[in-house]
Amino acid sequence: MKRVTETLQKHYRHHIEIHGKPDRDWLILIHGAGGSSKSWYKQLAAFAEHFHVLVYDLRGHGKTAALNEHDEEEYSFHLIAQDLLSIMDQHHIRSAHLCGCSLGTVVMQELSLIAPERIDSMVMAGAVTKFHGWSKLLYMIARYLLVHILSKDQLYPLMAYMFMPFKLARGSRRLFIRESKKLCPDVFYKWWRLTYQFTIYHRLKEMRIPTLIVMGEYDYSFLSGSYLLLKKCPNATHHVLERAGHVCNMDQPRAFNKLAVEFLLGQSGAKSVVREEEAFHLLA
Image (cartoon, rainbow, N blue to C red; front, side):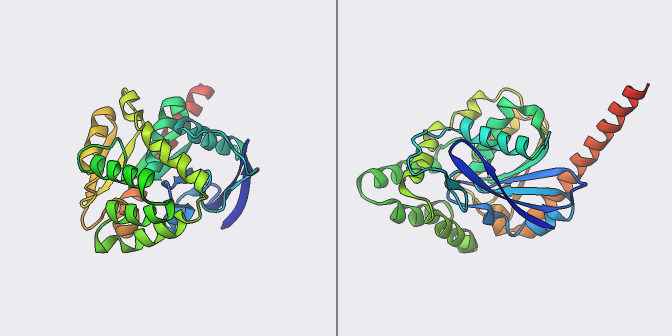
């Protein structure tokens, strides 16, 4: 079953698709900057077989449309996380499993700070913590080029090759470049300025939410940083996929889907046990 709907926010009308089985746990998919809900096309069938799946386009991405041409509101990860909470409220979702990719994992980290009770578990694909080492150098080069030399339409293809350089990431690059060209310049620069705000990791204390972190072995930008999350998340497990880059869910979809579905079903089963125990105590 697929249902297309919209959710109204203050400045945006979010494009939303709902798939899967209404009697199952909610699973919400969050794409990265420059992508869209299409980033999950290799996961939807596998996820919809077991969950009630909601996938949406972030502000300014895909089919999510601004309600006016002059949205002067500056973006923050807190604001983007509040968008997700509003979507959950309007669809009467008390809590859900979350699955995010790239910058979508930063939105999940922010939500874990402001509303951890709304998250049942998390799957992070290509988890982002902060720029350092190789990724910091690439980011500084891209920032200089954007300010002094290139337009956004020239920068995005370059960034696609900088962060997804290998032949196996060809499909990821094509999707990223195609979807990023749909961003208007104003929205692009707002999302670009969000990268200055990679401070969420430092604000995380001890995240108790069950978490699966899946990285690609060729994700030279963020793989080493993903191990930092393990120190903050005592209930996290970490897996590195062979022959995969930053967007590992697209590079190795079968392996990623198997890991994610098995993890989420395990958490869904644990959630059912908790519900039964709560019901038993209420009746006692």
